[in-house]
Image (tube, rainbow, N blue to C red; front, side, top):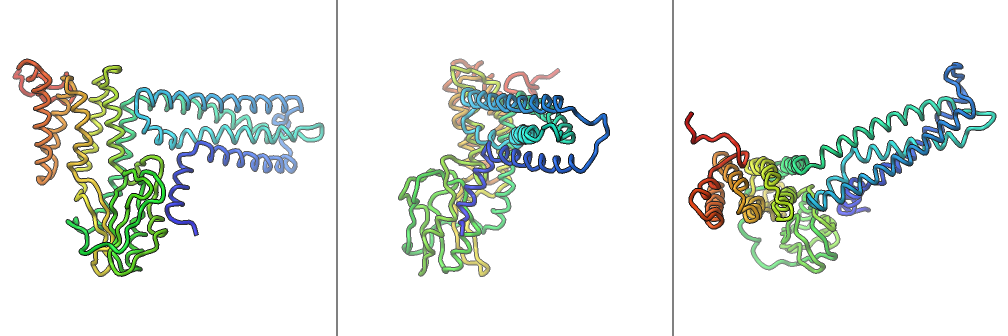
Length: 426
């Protein structure tokens, strides 16, 4: 029986693959060509919808060549995306780009049209002309051209840093919606591990980043073996072979392979259960824009807009740092580590504050972001926001040499520079 981790990896491989859906499109194209050939043999079309052998051959040959060319064009665009994203955005963004449904639908349409036209071309001879097939191939070719235009429009508009930031932030917010459900299912945070020594410590058998955890499976294992499972590494952590990932408390321990089967490892992090990865990608884009080679603080400010949205969403989610899942009797069965509010805040702001310390625009937008959080976050999270404000003030003090420059950098502005000023009286 295939374990949860193997199914998870297979599902994500298919979602990230650029060849699975096009191959499926090609197979469907061949099947549809067979169906259209059957219809052509049983249905007599009006004369105006019939084709000569030469016309059918020319049209189908042209369509086959066009689809090959369009497939090459989309592949070339994909290479340009990789180069652009690696140079000016974040290599971590590429995983999201590979999963774009429009890109796969375009490739599948082109492959399906190619297979359909080629299959009908093989059937053209002196005794049989696939009139329906030629007509449908022409319609499919027209649809392919329209999809290409839509794809080019999507490509040119959605590869801008601000569009990428919006896409990543929306992905992070979808993960947060799932986190709310997990947080409601979990009990209040646990302060310490169960008493006594663990009866079993389970180490990773291979290297990889923890992409996801099958919490229901762990809970079922713990109940079945009357034990408590404590994860020592969280989603997003990279583990080497032998690194302890589970500690088992109780009289009986679940099989090691079943425990590891509830843990999905991969070569890089994913957004599936890791909103911190969304924050990481946004920060990467911002600090790359702030590098001396690029020197684009406006992009950093635009990224801060979406970071603010993500942080405000995070402020509504319980973030105790460690969650427990209980059985029906109320016993703690699974302990899963997570990030606290302070961890997300540090991740989102520290590097941008450090790399943008000399930018008046970035400092002002950071100040406005923290002012907004101070007004909206729950009372128990205000202290960490105040600490960030103090660190920002200290950074401005170190980076700007005179009082006027420090005053300008320390003024909150939601646009960085150029926003409405509340301290000016008309």
